[in-house]
Image (tube, rainbow, N blue to C red; front, side, top):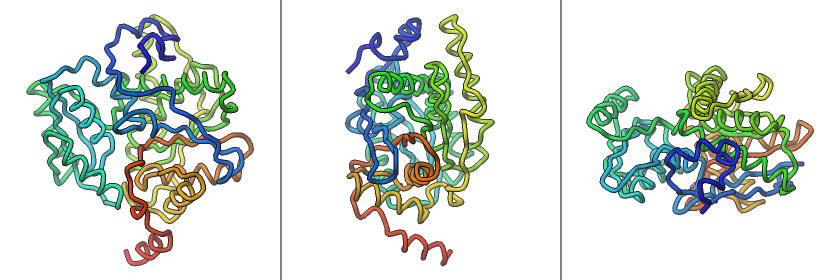
Length: 339
């Protein structure tokens, strides 16, 4: 594990060393070339950045769970098969804390059901509510009673610091010639923390890399205005803590793609299922059906259609998934025709 002074974020902003941080991850996460799938296609293996569960949420939780001690209680919200909720429960327990996870219903797929099963086993309390509002009301009560609040998806300025660190980490890998500088980084767009942190981090690093965020939740959340507000809030947060002025990403350095969504959170698409199978068969990499599949389908298409280097940000740890969790694309098409 890296000490606080060794992570790229603190190298760039020494004042941030004062923030409490739970050391959960193993960084840097590796990058790999996936030219068997498409020209100049690479992957950032965030799934390998922690045990027992890796993924992009680990980076946010390092800061959001900073200072949590044995006997504390943390509370968060998420959909029934939320990997953020699962990661929060796992790492809160690792720190000796109790986790209260308030969930709402979603359209389920094979992978989401597996996440929900693990969550039921790992969380201290994980009821399923009929609506988003019901889950939030119960979570607010828990917060009022003294629980440490972990926002949905970990997407607050404090949590986004972990994603800025990831961008600066990638900049170091590029400078060390581990991989060529990517022209675009393709990432799932849920609550926006990863996209916002990467875009801001690349701007801080002086990289001209475009963040291509692929919608995986309803557009009321997955939109450019939301991501840019989160970028602005996080930049002001860092400026307040450090006394430095941060460069914001240019408008062209954030692109939102809505065409891969499929109409519902958790709904499997034929293109997504095909991308999952390609990754497994050609590269031995497990990609989830809820988030990663849609972003991976976009990454493969962009790598084939646009010049330059494309980097897919593998944000979900799917190493525990069974091969049978991925239905054939033909079955997905058949399901859609019956709906």
